[in-house]
Amino acid sequence: METDFLPSHLKKYIVEQHYEKYTPIDQAVWRFILRQLRDYLSKHAHECYVEGLQKTGIEIERIPRIEDISAKLKEFGWRALPVSGFIPPAAFMELQSLGVLPIASDMRTLDHLLYTPAPDIVHEAAGHAPILIHPEFADYLRRYAQVAKKAIISKEDLDLYEAIRELSDLKENPNSTAEQITAAEKNLEKVSSQMSHVSEATELGRMNWWTAEYGLIGSLDKPRIFGAGLLSSVGESKWCLSDKVKKIPLTLDCLKTSYDITEPQPQLFVTPDFKTLVTVLDEMASHMAFKVGGLAGLKKAIEAQSVNTAELSSGLQISGVIRDALTDKSSQVAYLQVQGPTQLSFKDKELPGHDKSYHSHGFGTPVGALKQYPGKCPSRLTDTEWSAIGVADGQNIRLEFASGVIVTGKQRSRLVRDGKTLLLTLDGAKAEWNGKVLFDPSWGAFDMGLGMNVPSVFGGPADRIAYGETEDFVAKRVPAPRYSEQELALHKQYATLRQLRETKVSGAELEKALTTLLATQDKEFAQDWLLRVEALELLKARASSSVLIAKIEKDLNTIGAKDENAKNLIQDGLRLSGALA
Image 1: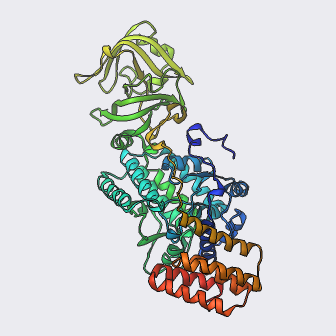
Image 2: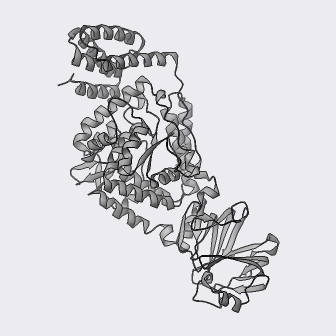
Image 3: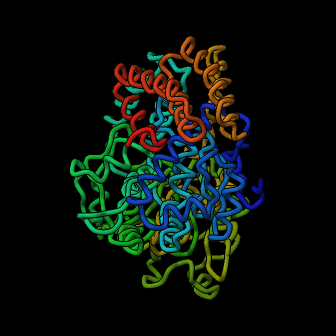
């Protein structure tokens, strides 16, 4: 598995697929879902879907190997790598920006055949991969990931993500207790109720949901499906096109519409074509902090209470939890304050000696022009201009900014990159503004950044690799299921049936083998419907025992009478098996 090209902070999310972990029931569930989806979506999905299944190596008969999907996707400029369940949104987006489709290697259970809130290989492989063969959609997804990398993620977003991940994993894990699920549901309700604002990450999450996950394409009256959440759900792919779901033209207004991952969506957005996705994305990006910067961008970062980066006009990047932005009378940023570990970078590379351990207690700097040079960014002053105001190594200096901030101290050094002064380091320094002490000499050396303004503010540290772990990049694993003796016995039943199908057994030999298999099924697994549907399909295709066929049909009717969900699934299975007219 090729991972050498990945940054080190992303490698921890990549896992081995461990193909042997898939049980015979997993394989049967995959086969049932893919047969249903292909039958329905060949008529109702975007026209590239069926072709995409073939071109990405996704077969109906067995769960795909992710390395095989990756080999096929390389033809379209992508590759696939296995991950475990939910990974943090920031990590997911960064992987996509590198042309990697993260595929959750887990498989939904039979109980969650129609829909699972947790990512699984059905959703990622059968949902996302096929549409990637369309160049315009692939271009949108890459562009989206690049924009999402810059989005400001709030601490509240991270708490909500963790609550959703915990509940989804518990619901999909057959070993979870009712008490655990109830507690996780209450925690999600609590965290959701405490959300105080809509962050950029939340807005981007909504756009992703209403496009790549639950998007429709074409006309309002007869749209087709392209969103992976719909392409991978037997139930929702049919529900979404009914009159019960409102269809709305896709515009930037989709960012105002929240969603509930545990419920079918009451409305969906329709894009006329894939190019419109890029148009809407670009419109959204134009309002984001990394584009607008300034006080508006800084306010978003301050509200987020997470690690973000403020980039000065000099190119100096200040990464940490931005606490405050003091402004002058004209509402221009006069002084920037960052709390806790802070990293200083240039062109996304950490400056030597300015890592978060050196600036462990925070960072502050004036912003704006000097009074002596009011129309010029201080970073662009020439050596002659610095000398003219007495700025030189070893000299006591006094700098007064147009905002009113005054800095005094003895200059230790001046850091220059690409002809621009990024930092002045002063000893015994003091910074004051309107009688307020912003930096005290007792705090040590004062590394003062230089920049006329703050043209960009974006999510996360500038040099993520050098910065190290942040809260949004915590890797967790979905626990491996534990099977009881009875469950293992049922696995054996499904394995036997699969062997009968794959070895082309037919006629009297097939009837005899299925009679024995179904006798055990009747005794031990009376409520299991999927194996009986598969057995009936085999009999219809390869044998002619009307007695055995009638028995299976009777058993399935009995199961369906007790369980409405099972009844509908049975009907779908029988229709494709040729058992229903």
